[in-house]
Length: 493
Image (cartoon, rainbow, N blue to C red; front, side, top):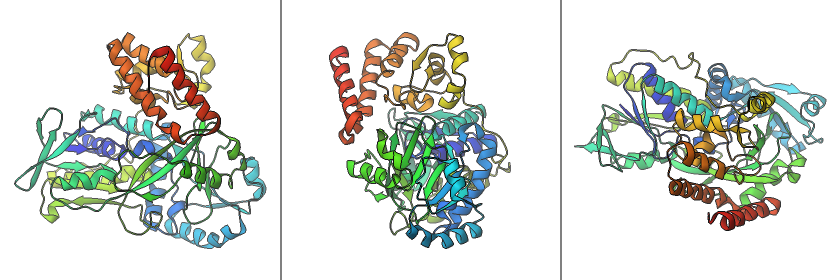
């Protein structure tokens, strides 16, 4: 069978089915986790955020939070989370929040103001109420890679940079057509796991599926000054979540419906709104440098405003509407990806007559052979003593990790290396390390010099897209590096 979509859900489906002995091929038009999965704030939800308006999603998140902390602890930093009331008006939400958590099975514990400020000294000193929940930070790229490695170890075939279209014969989906080569790949069932693009894929089979792409913008700041996920104690709104991530913090998010999930970019207005709202949680945020901002598309399934739409997921058997051979899974959250994959695999196996049960809730995901930045800093002395060459000082990425990105983790471009190692995600935003990795590509991985230079130029062009909405010192730094590359390297990103 075939899976379309190489985000965490598609990879989770491939992993689950491969574990059950099903022959699987997955096709992704870009790189792994290069769509919505890699454009999230990396929050492992406790469920508390949805406990009032969407109790089904809240219960799903609470359940999957516990499972993922057991099977994927190596890609999770168990920070804990706090819901914080910073204004008296926030307390109007307090009672319904606590009732919703209780009904949804979401653990919540009241903290005294003194305990809250002791735990997070940079928290707004005027905080009026705080509750502890089971939120955590999860690395979406490493999560995707762990599922990739597990799926491959069970003989799944994973094809990146391989766009496909549904192969439809006499009203039945019979496989996929590889767009670049024109080759047909036949499959008993095709799973459409393309998230915000699911409606576009369904239209290839004449199916109307209303998936409304909802843009969310997030802001990355240069310093990590909190170690707990912080949420504003109020109905979900713009700029009310702060997630500590490795050496940085991610602030977000916004919610705006868009016509297409492609080529989404943040605006200066969105960035300013997010920073202004986050200052109410942590006033020092206003003095931190915004080093990056990015936007992703949520696959929402219901009407109303983006905040009102449910975060639950759907698994759709299109056989019931007259189109055989196609199953769509969409909606949901990063936190519930494994459950989405399980329910999808259950349906596939029922249709194929496979009786093997799901085991992904018990089987630990494999270690990713590249360290997190926090692990690198903990091992820093030993790394230097062992003479390992560091190619990215901000994130302490070593040459050997870049080699593993290519040789083990299927990297093909500089952007792929960034997603696998965090090369370029630190303060300098790849301005000092991108050329080093391009040089390694030409030196060690069979890329010609011109090809490596072209990839470097493409990578820098992508990195610098955000420069139009940056301000202050980060804008000046970016412009300086643009000039440096243009004059010294004849590269114009």
